[in-house]
Length: 595
Image (cartoon, rainbow, N blue to C red):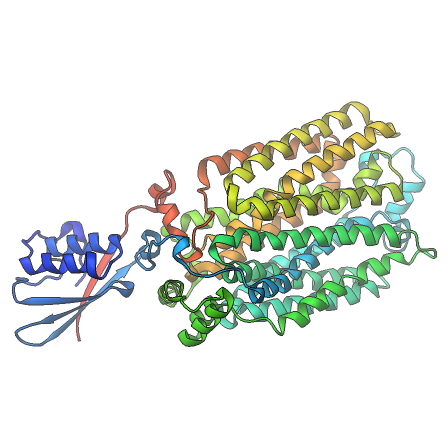
């Protein structure tokens, strides 16, 4: 029988049901949402019985499955409630705060997360290395002769247009379009086989791509190597943030997950240092070392992934091995009593198993907030303009008149600032919260972008350069900008999406986040040099306008997620002033089948 609660005829509840309510509320400590729904069910006689006088009820509240037995005939009835929005209101998981989860930071979980976070190093290394090698004249002379000739021969070309070449931008951006495609395959692998295999595939693909890039003899071999790198980054970026979020203790999830972005910063800094060193190698082959050195972090991730433990969430989701999951929880939490957390994982897993098509389910109304965030956050992360700095910092510094060596050294400075700022974010994110860091970083980026744009508009024309003093002032302002990004949108752009999804759509949601990030990274990388040529100094005002929009978005639409257990995250959306209206009321459908 299909029944909608408001339309059922009201009937008087038998007094024994009042006793049952008392037991449910105080002895068994039932979730208050479930208790409220039971009260409605009794009052409205949703079970369709002509009377409740001769019936006693035994309520099995896991996933809201009610079993009722007729005391006179002994016949059994199974009242199965399909709760389309159970996760959103907290029916499937308790509303206990994070402090009720036992556990501490153990050496085992710290080492596991450090190894997994190496995936951030390979991503950061690639971001930093491409901008450096594309500013090296021997590299340009071998693969992009048109750009090399424009730099050295044609003095009539604008400073802003010297690097505008479609094939050169394809070298940088090809990685991100292949990463976009790979992230969707990674979702299926992560869900079906676990987080660990996806990390392993990511490391191995990146290892192959770095070897091919270092040995490249023509531009097509070079770009194919970048495509393999993209496959590796697609798998790693989809699985590593999920892995870290599920392994980390809830109270320290921000610290651990920001470690991924910290490793991205280390990768960028390492790439800039290597570029600065290899540029000085005589013979013009230093760029090969720069590209091939990506194999070092890729090897660490590939070998380390072989020894990584699988997360308890994945063990329960894939195999229902509660005993193995409990053993894993005890090991990573460092305590024996992990029952509260295990119960939440089991209940979340029971919901996830009802979802056969997570990409189809994620567009349903109850998941609308997570879907919006999985698209908006990575989009905003890219239109901060950070990749203008990350990809093309040496090119940008050469545009304003710094020499090749000075440009590479300036990129090292910005990379160092970014790494230090990300480390600061790791220390404060679980104290200050996500929203405050987003807001502080937004104001900081906006101010520095406006000043850089103003200096370039007034001091840098189409020809010639700017004075050394103004050149270094631009460098300082860019460092301020990088710092603002590195303790806000940099790490939080990975942290927040990885922690907001319920288990049944978590892999799909993370894939959407990664894919959207890659899509707009590709678009920014592919169009930036063209935009720089046409917008000139206005490029900084363009990205500054987006910073205003994204800061307002966070202020109005993103609830605070610090210290909220990952399997209880849906509750915050139901309490948000806007999203509670978008998600709508909980629909309850009751089917009666005879056992």
